[in-house]
Length: 428
Image (cartoon, rainbow, N blue to C red; front, side, top):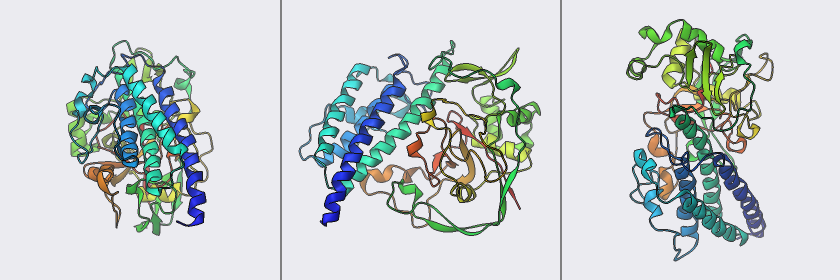
């Protein structure tokens, strides 16, 4: 190994040691407002209990880092390999996803003790400043993985609390209920001439395998909206009877509207005082000037059709997002809700990062020359490249250090419990 590598590896291990502590503490902070009962509930098959998230992210480090770094490693509890595996077929069998809420044992205190035990072992490992680059890469992947679950803790408990007839808040109300009188900025457009562009990640910085490799793609001339679609924009769509008009919807989308009785975004409710929305701060009047959230791909596509526009492709989105710094309203702001644009709509698009994930018109497929990670970790992204649509940009639930212009999120087109929104595009 070169002397340069000997210098770099300990420095990287030291930085990862501190980052590990910060990420793990942030997860515990998000769970802190919740009671043990809150942390056990599973309100639908697609969501997971907070307690399971706490344990699964810990299992990830034990399974993919500690057990591979230490010959003869003895797990904290061998049964956890079944309870807290998510979808890694190569690792072994697991508790069915729809039945994670049945795991009353181990208790929350035992899960916290599990986290503490693994944190001690990880700290000892990193204190030795390992020089194995592959091992350090797996630790970084584990931290990025945990940041994904930080967002899922919030989206999943949001759905669970909404499912409770008492509609309890995740925390005391922390934002003013002044949205009903808000003004909505006019929708303006940024133009791009199209042509041959490059998208995807390259370089030594972390990226998931599905963001690579960087490659060429051709774009026709297009226009991208300079702001996200607001709740006020979407309210006009609702009040125009769009949920009763099959001509606006894809066939599968119209079937979902009828099957589930959709009439507005998830968490919207119409009362005697007008529309309100269930948020992590409890029921709040809708902020008409903030981006609409909790809409499915089907709803986003129908809205775009109604508006005489379309959804952007991920190539179009990334090409313009790459011209802006990845700043915005992220988890660290503490707002935990989309905010109105903080800048004028003239010039480049605003709110490309944070606030709401933005649906694209692109199916989640591998990039040209895509290669998944080796071994069981190859199941992380590649196995889901069917039946999903790509979202971009992060949300107010996403950690700031987790996002970049090349990041590809993906969900089924009917998913609504995520912090997902809309940005419009048009052909030239």
